[in-house]
Each structure stands twice: as C-alpha cells, then as structure tokens.
Image (cartoon, rainbow, N blue to C red):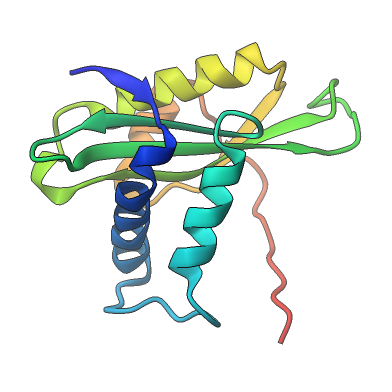
Amino acid sequence: MIVRPATSADVPELTRLRELLFRRVLDAAEPAAEGDWRAEFARDVGERLGDTLGVFVVDGEEGRLAACGIGVIEYRLPGPYQGSGLSGYILGMVTDPVYRGQGYARLIMHELLAWFRAKDVDRVDLHAPAEAAALYRSMGFQEHQVALTWHAS
C-alpha cells in the first residue's frame, strides 16, 4: 500500500470520502449545510492542495480512494506551544468502510506529520472519535484542554 499526495484528479473522491466522514460523525443521512457544501469543498481543496492544505491518500480499486487524510496549516500568534505561529489541524481522516482495519490511517498520519514538519509547523491538533483516539495517542498526540465552539446563528 502506497500513500501519495492527492492531486486535483482526486477531488471527486475526496469529496465522497468527506461525505462518508460527515455521515459517520453526525450519524445522519445528509449533513445539514447552507448551499452545496460539496461544490465549495471541491473548489477549496482544488485551490489549496499542497500549499496550506496537505492531503494524502491511499488508492483503492476501480478508481476509488481507500482512505485520505487532510491537514491544514493556520497562522496564529507565536506562543509557548507554537513558536513559529504556524499551527496544524487534522480535519479529515477517513477510510472507506470496505478498507478499514488495514493500517491506512496510521500510514497517512505519518505522511501528514512529515508534511507539517517540512512546513515548520510546531503544533498539530485534531479531534478524534473515541474509536480512533488510541491510534493518535500511540503516535504522540496527547490530551489537551477542551475546545469550545461558537457558531453564528
């Protein structure tokens, strides 16, 4: 199994996997969003690939992707936990159900962390479902303060 950087040709499959992630996390048939989030996602990924957006994939069969991992670089003011001011966030680790349990997430995460290091990112955060937390802990992620989120009404 080979992990490779995603290309613009992968965007439709990345969109499919993103939808699988939302359906699993939200336990919903259709994620609620204003407008067509899929088109916005595809456009944004296509524009940002490789720059501030690192996307790594494992190919499946018949032109489908087996798994993907998406990381984004953000700038925050420098501080004791991120001297460069660059912060990373893993926002989309997903494996197609047909391919789960084969180690793809670990391989992809290794590539994402190497990509962050090459971009001088000092800190990487993620939110993990309970069933994936042990994997991330085994790779050096640690518990951190609880995040609070605000959404505009």
